[in-house]
Length: 293
Image (tube, rainbow, N blue to C red):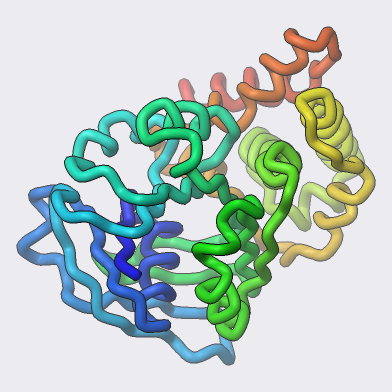
């Protein structure tokens, strides 16, 4: 199949590299000023003991050819501008962006049946144009069950590369399952400046994390998901202690934050369903103040 990657940062680059490595035809959409120097091969450095991956991919500035799948891995605040580079509608769209609100935006543009919601959990970085680093020992890719006929064979190949993948029938559970982990993780690490191990070792911040997970799961379940807060909380006990969130790194670097996409659905959901989400709101306020300073 032919694939296009919109958002050639850490996540898009990782996905594009592994797709190309299993024999898929991959096109990467890059900024015009990056095109001339963009490499003809993508590379992915993987955790210690796992062989690095190098695979060919073409770079373009606009998508003007038909593709079977457009993988979207932009930051949420970049989505609208990035979509302007898509001149030819893809047959299917697989969004990997953070949050939940982007799915409806994409369905309005490409049609409900064309969009296959998905989530990915991995710590990764772009080290140079076309060069990417997987920091976490895991990559968890989940997709809605509607994508299995199209992507089932690809998913099996990704599993052989060490990915943990599953198709999930409940779309709200799929989307909120990631957000109920990501939002507390990103908000607490960004507000505290600590990695997850330091958060768990500090009783006050540990309680903030637990409360944020409970708030997120309550809103998620009111939205149609089926999640258990204790199970999400337990996941934190098994992640690498040095793990830091992308938002935390963005705060330190002074970059624009995905704060609304990650924390906003919980706060807005709390208002919609009459639920208290004080911890989430307070963490967001602390991060805004930190970023402004």
